[in-house]
Length: 127
Image (cartoon, rainbow, N blue to C red):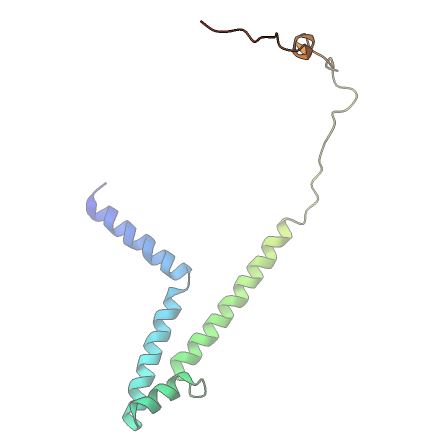
């Protein structure tokens, strides 16, 4: 396997894991907050801009889209979990004992008498 293919497959795997754990939402939210701070700081002081950004009463368009998308994603995940649980609700028959028609095996074997005896005293020594 070539080095470029190996390197690109690693980056693709990292990107897939990043999206799978919701990292893209964190990046988008960070961009939205940075944009809001810049926009609000044009109107007033930086402290007021930061306060407006994080108080939750002045969301931007990006923030509302992110919030709606995350909520719809959570609803889809909960529907998938509910469907997965239904798979385990099926009745599974278990057979604990063989039917009486089967060939019966002897209860004891030829080594049971040897195993029931105590070991010789003193134990045998090697060497």
